[in-house]
Length: 403
Ligand code: NAP
Ligand code: MG
Image (cartoon, rainbow, N blue to C red):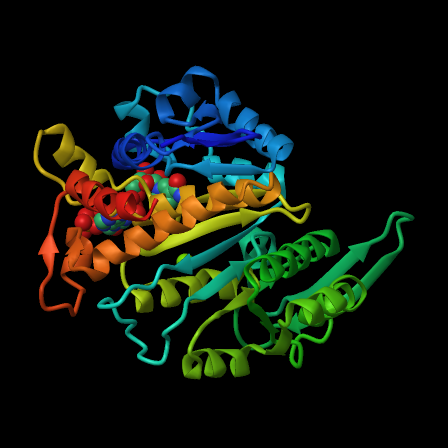
């Protein structure tokens, strides 16, 4: 069989620990036998980041801007312990943070749903994709403890030196606390465009919610920017695609989400996204089944698994012990990127292959063959726990039948 040919390279960002081991296995077993894989390779493993003073991360993000599609392996974000473990020159920043800052993107996280692994919320039969605005609000706040008898005010000094003051609170009879938040219209607009583009891309409705009834300037600005951009740039495209933009109050959104069957994108302000993504991920089961894609407002895509480098399994692997690490989210990062590349370069065989690989992966689990994390969750009667490598071989058996 002739291998599928590619035109533009994918930006390939390799990573660390167990996911680095899985990365190679996926390529060797499930991709290279079928595709004449063209990638521009960036090693974002911690060793190489340290060697290049993290320049490799910046280069990989710029390459993503150039080519439009990247696939990323999970990477270590260094902490004090990693400084000694890897003998680091510096505590390098999170690669995901660096890449996100360069691409100005929004992260969309979605669970992969299979029969036998049921959501803890039984009505949720389709994935709920969470989009979290990753700038400002409480994550870039300024806060203080305030003594009794103090008066706290907001003061804004404009570029000509004029001051506008507004009372926050006069503390009479008790000490207290204050907090200053900000956001910028440009970032909110980028968030809105990434959300609308991703909705069109995946043909799903998009929901957005804030507390605009209480926060008449701050949250209301989010609502207005979304509404303006939707009206002027997306309304017609949404109508053509048969999808909807739905805005509601955050309380109402939470109630509707719980009652829903899923199958939409939920755009969240920074804090809401932080909290709600953990709730949604937990309800859908394993971290190994959660995919993640960074979408820039200009339409650049970086696909990855939502989980980390699975350190505990890696240390077992190093000791020569058997592991049963779930590779599904990493496989879906590859298929997401290959589908996108196929679509942009008009290579239908590539897109088709990626879909077949996804189907073979899901069929493997639905046939009862799965890694340990899923084995404990699955309600299937004839289930079998396999090791990291066997799982990929089982997928390949099923893939071979379809290509
Ligand atoms: P983690 O790698 O996601 O793993 C946490 C635990 O979740 C694992 O020990 C394992 O549980 C389970 N798990 C996660 N993914 C799994 C999979 N594919 N298959 C089976 N089980 C899975 O998080 P972490 O241990 O907090 O972080 C490890 C490293 O990853 C850190 O250095 C962190 O900086 C990095 N990290 C990177 C990214 C990224 O690149 N996007 C994201 C998060 C964390 P059991 O041990 O109980 O089996
Ligand atoms: Mg959180």
